[in-house]
Length: 243
Image (cartoon, rainbow, N blue to C red; front, side, top):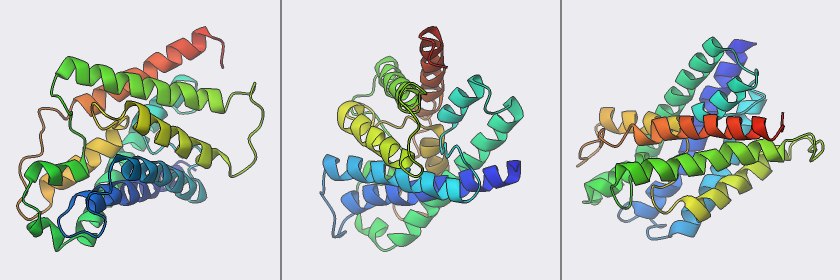
């Protein structure tokens, strides 16, 4: 059972990044037909990406469809996962993100050399702040991740009632879309260590034409802040007797 869950989380996260990283590449890379599509296009596609990734993960044996170590941490706090399961699930999510980013690189292979801006290329793989201020950046990612986990618990609360089978991923996709439109401006709303760290590792490893550095000095923010945000969401939800 645990191996099915790991496979689902791995492939599901890969699908997440193929569609999420793919829309960033489509909007950013030179001579792409979608170049300049804009923030609405990107946030909408990321909402779809999460929905499609969750469907994939669920079909392949991961009924929770987390795709995100921060979400998995939140569910560990309420007893869905053991600590070893949390660790193993987080690792495969990060690896799935790495694979998804490599697939995006291959899909846009001729376009990397045509694109001069190294920071723009990096932004296809991982997040970066609009204004580099580490405390403020951490706070923004903390807030976005808090509301991600908190609202997931609100959506699936027994008080709301049983959601019809197959509808949950659509609702979570709308939540991701809303978070991007509302809180994504300062940092690019990573909210997910696997979404950021996995593709950042791919950027560091892959022979991307004309790439720059992978900005490891910032990399801790989209890894640590979502985990802290998810834990804070658990504390508040528990205090409100959501569980």
